[in-house]
Image (tube, one colour):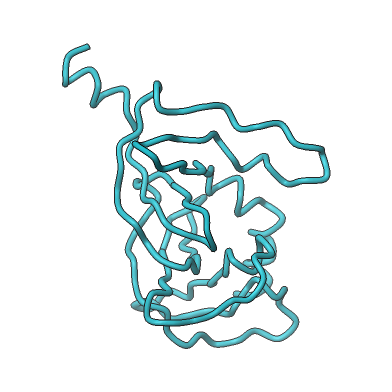
Length: 158
C-alpha cells in the first residue's frame, strides 16, 4: 500500500485519558482544548453536567465524562482539560483527565467493540484501536452525547 493510500484510509483521533483508560474521538469534531475553569452551575441539572461557560459569546454546556462514566473520585487539577466540540450543530465541552496526542489509525489497527450485556451502555464505542502497546477506546462522540443528553443541554441553556 502506498503512503498516500494509507493516509487516505486512516482516521485522525484526538486521544485523551479518563482514569486509567485512553479514549479517542474524531479530530474533526474538536474545536479547541482549554484548561478547566470555573463554570456557572445550573440548578437541577444532572450531576454530569457541570454547568455552562461563556465562550466568546456562545453559552457552552460542560459535561464531565468522568462523572458520566462513573469513574469514582473526580479531581480537578492542572492536567484537567475541557475539549470544546462541535457535535450535532452544537458547541459542547467535555471534561477529561488529560489530552494525550493526535494519532492516525488505519483499518488494520481497529478492532470491533466487544459485546457486553445490554445493561451496559456501549453503543457509543466504535471499536478498539491499537498503536504500539496502547489500547485506545474509539468513541462516537455524537452517539455518546445522545439526543436525550442533548435535550438536557437545551433545558439547561434555556
